[in-house]
Structure formats: structure tokens, C-alpha cells
Length: 340
Ligand SMILES: [Ca+2]
Image (cartoon, rainbow, N blue to C red; front, top):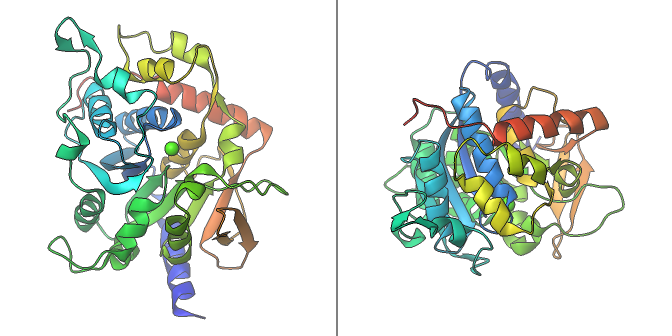
């Protein structure tokens, strides 16, 4: 057995055994996101906060792979809204999609009188640490085999992490850090519907990075393909009613800014977060083991292989209903009262 395959099998065994105890231990979670492009990233961040309030995860850091200066302040104000304004935020340098977001500006710059509607600590992403440095620092401080990464944007930051050399944060290279510290990578990426050769946005936007992650990432990867989120729509009616427990809700305001209400948006990134924290709850089916491959156009394919480290999510009609209900409840859950 080649060494890399054996390492995957060993990590896979660790993953299986640790998932049994995950109900008692909050999952240490990193959220890597292109927040600011589509609105599902923003709702997914709300879902993470709700899961943390329920004691199921602990958000260690958010790293952003959309290269736009107001995305980090948006994440910061959402974290502040959920009373967790001290969560570190890292930003990509020289990354993809620098164009302005359709919704973060409206929320970051919203005012009531002369005061910012949503208080925040960061004025600009330029004041935030670089993402790979933050990933290295965050991973170095965690227990071996513990960290779950939910990656719902391009693979820019994660590919650079794998390439990173040892530094003052850790004697490990990036690849070694991931192999030692991570338990699971849950990604929104690709397209696994039969006979559908369309490239998926997260892959297509940074093909070399996606190729590198699927070829080299040393832990199990579970992908939520385009078809999963597309089958579970988040209802605009929920935005209109379930978020009214406060006068101004940053996620509802972002959703209204993103598109003409009322509209229902696929839950792509929310599904990936839900699986990352609750892998054992049966919201989804999981494919056989295999390998995800990415071609030069960004088209993904899946090759079954015994002992392969990759799986993709599947979804039947009852699962779609359960997932939708869970995501509505979690996204609209108010902040916990006693959180920092
Ligand atoms: Ca996204």
C-alpha cells in the first residue's frame, strides 16, 4: 500500500472513532469561506453560531477567500451580533473575486442616526491577519486529530496552507499540520449528479487550488456537491418572519440586499456546515469511498476506490425535508444570552 494511502486509512480510522464521541465534545471548527459572493455563506455562519450555542462546535477562526476588503468586517459584525466578537478572522491576499459584494456593503455601512447599526471591531480586511498564517496559528494550538474544517468557497487558502513551510507558528509544514491536527474537511464543492459535466463555481474559480487540495489533503474529505444544496431551498418566507426577534438582523438584512424578495436560495454552504458538525445525524447519505478528481476545466468526477479518503453526500426526499427544517431552525436561532 502506498504510504499516502495508508496514512489516509489510518486517519480515516481515527475519524470514525472520534465521531462516536463528538456528541459530548464540541467540534473545534474552522470556517473557510468566500462570504460576500453568494448569500448562503452568511446563513451558514449563522448556523455555526447556533450550533456553538447548543454546545456542538467551537468556532476557532474564520478565513476568507474572497479578496474584498469589506467581507472581513461583515464576518466581524455577524460574530459580534452573536456575542462572539473575539473570533479571529483571516483574509486572502492576492485572491479571487475582488469585485464588490452584492450585500456586505449595505450591512457593514448601515447606520441608525450617526451610529453603525451593527457594531464591529474591524474597519477593513486590510486590518486582519493573512489567512494562511491564521490557519497555521490556529491549527498549531489544537489537539491532534481534532479540528474540523468547513470549506465553502474556493480552495485558495487551503492549497496555500498545504504548501506552507515550517515557521514560528509550528515546526510542521502545512501538510504535516493538517495531517496531525485535522479530523475532517467538509467542503461545498463539485457536482456529482450523474451525466452532469458542468463545472461547479467553487472549483472553477480556482482550479489549480482545488486540484491540489483533492490530490494532497491528508484527511478524509466529504463534499456536498452542487446538487445537494440545490435540492434544499432556504425559504425567503423564513427571512420575512423568523428573524424578527430583533429590529435589525444582519443576516436578514444581507439576504434582502442580495436579491429581490421574496426568493428562495439553495442551501449549498449550510449543508456543508451541518454535515461538518453533525456527521452522525443522518441528514444526508454518504457515498462509497473513492477519489474526487478535477480536470483542467474544473469538472469534478468521482472514482470509487476501496480505502479512498473522499466521499460525497447524497440526499433522499425525507432527508431533504429534515435538513431544510434543521437549517431554518438553526439559521434563525437567536444569539445565546451569556456568550462572549
Ligand atoms: Ca460560498
